[in-house]
Amino acid sequence: MNDTKDSIWPHRFYLRSALPIRVPTVRFISSPDAPVASALTAHRQQLWQMYLDARDTLWLPTDLELEADTRDWLTSMSESEKWIVTRALGFFATVDGLIADNIITRFSQEVAYIEAKYFYGLQVVVEHIHSETYAKLINALIPDEEEQSVLLTWSTTVPSIAFKNIWVLKWIVDDSRTFAERLAAFICVEGIFFSSCFALLSWIKSNGKMPGLSAVNDLISKDENRHLDFACALFRRIRSPPSSSAILETVRDAVDVETDFAMDMLSVPGHNISLQDIHQYIRFVANRLLVKMGYGVAYVADNPVTN
Image (tube, rainbow, N blue to C red):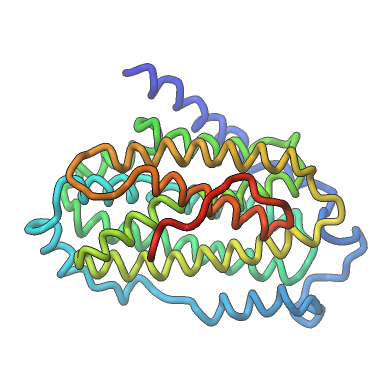
């Protein structure tokens, strides 16, 4: 067993031993004497409308058509394109489950806003739909069970993916961090950590290949934008938000991890994608999230990607 895998596995066991996480007694987004949760008590119109909008956009993976994708995979996809897709699937195969676990064990227990409880309940369903969808894609494109098993181990054996997962796990189990700090970290997860995959899968779409995957990428990226908008709106309601320096440290850390992942995704030659453009796009996304949370930008970065 190599050193990388040895160094990563303990984090996975640490997560398993730490969950279920102790439910905090302090509610961070409302008063301790908040009324019993009921849709009748929802009065924060912006947050409630975000829940309703997300509810009305639910879709099902049963509608997914992948025959053309399977044909493209076997006949027209280059090695660099296949590498990008498999690296994306290797990351997505586990991260949605981690996000759902964080909501179930932490965030939904820590918020008292009824609007947030409803949204988080819905988001767990959406994350499971995403996980089911990626499983269907993996089954269609990589039918060999041994190859599937290898791909699923990437969450702990491929450094660029494993370090992202470790970063997520760290923010789930760290009891020393405030709710606001952890909320900001998961804004980074669903924004910065998804940015390279979404952009590069859009590039696959621009090549006229993988229509099913492209449709899924469009749907899931819209879902994630809704999750981000809600999280940022909730963050702005926090009475004592973290300092700019604390948030910038978290964002810069996430950008560094995602930059390494992007380098891995583009490490197989044969594409015409500028690594510098992807790095700039990651920073552009980071700036956008900072502004949505109510802070100033951290980078000089325009959007170089046309979706």
